[in-house]
Length: 517
Image (cartoon, rainbow, N blue to C red; front, top):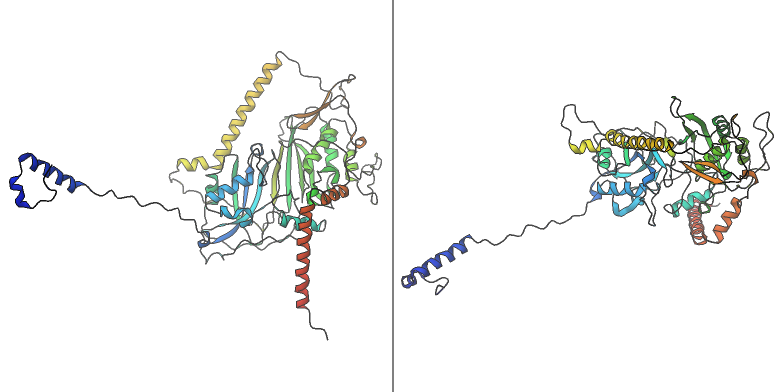
């Protein structure tokens, strides 16, 4: 080792050759060695939503219900994710909404609620999102609660919806309110492609629309159109059409829905605009669709109606069953529906029967006034411009065509399985519809398979007519049991909030009144 790390130059005279070489090597190392510079740590600065303008928009989307536990967000864990949870997470990931603020923070509203397994072709949600517009193009505004129009059937729904909006399954209210057309907008964020890039293929954003600040996907909807697909094997289509036609108009549907006491509904009157049974394709295929269009629907109303139509289609029930189930008011009974029929019996409480399967049900369309929405997509890429792999992957037509092709392949494979099995096995005797000319006699003790849709059946050797079955509790009794039992705490909060609202309204009226003379 050298006698010193930094000796004076004159001391080198006494150094040996090896010492000098060692010293030079040491100095070279000191010269080339640099202090290791630490790269600057990346600080995840929270996204400042307040620094960006916001606007209210409506989104139109489609989704396949078989992969989700329904549309509505659920606070408790579910076996499958909900559509709203997946969609909201995608919007938070793309920084369109503040994920920490939740659905309430962006004024989220949906048009229609769909249950587990039920699909939608044109569902609509409205909310406040981040915008690319400058303050000169859009007036910044904070999300505000949507004020619902007066609902004559039940004031309780509005109060409970505000207090427990994420807990209940609220009905879809009708609305014919015309809103002012939103202002024109310049180039905006690519809402459609941005969301489709991060959403699973089973959820696709179809279009978006600028809307007014007070627009509500729920209350501005003028009609909701549902489709229920089914095969016609063993069904009397003419009888089903007769039964469906009796639904048109405004009726009390308490016997054709599921009563949820948490809603505390007292009126079940809904208006049906269209109810028809048609072939899906005019090519002689056995696939049919039940089209039901109305201003609003009750909980599980479509599936209950479809269950009754299946009973009519098998000829186990007469089409007049629909008239009877709608005839709920003893003070205003229905007259005979047709000249050759008797007046239907009054049915004040719902008979027990199983509703149809949810898989074939689709929320087909949600209708709005042209003054409320203007649907459009993201700007198209200029012709001849390069298209990336990501652009192809997020293309809606490509994605839906891929899903369709895979479904078609599965259908073809299943058809071949069925053909292969038919070489060795005979199908069971088809007894339905009972009134067809070549219907065989049913041996005593035979188990009948009554269709419930979606390839499901209710099987039994004995059939009891619907109007002869056990009746469920009345709506009034169901509501009362809930208020005094399971829902007592929730009901107390509703009453407390209702009283506070009434008190505030009274104070405002008093302060506005002129002084007494």
